[in-house]
Length: 111
Image (tube, rainbow, N blue to C red; front, side, top):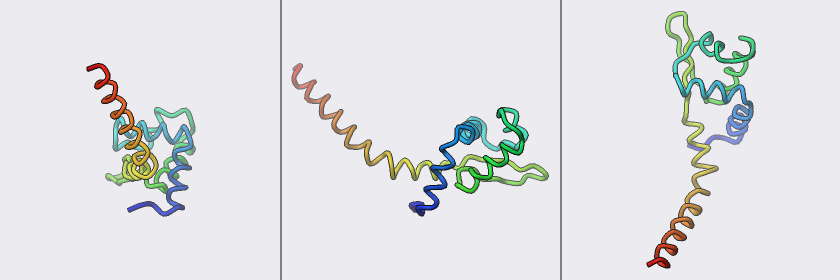
């Protein structure tokens, strides 16, 4: 299901910040981290990390799960896959076909 335009705008806004991309990288490397665990790897205040996480949650790139008193953060790759399908894959196929055609022509010329 494609995202509504406002969802897409929020998603691109979330990805625009290097700190938020760093948080996504951290979750990709080790999913299910607490706020404290994430803060250990960030060069910003706990409040700053919380604000970035809130925006990532609003963009549906991060989901949280309560485990007792802890709140665990997990990467949600689905919105990224939607971006890939909408903005990258449709441009990738013709380019790859052109490269394959070129390779075949070069191979035929050598033979």
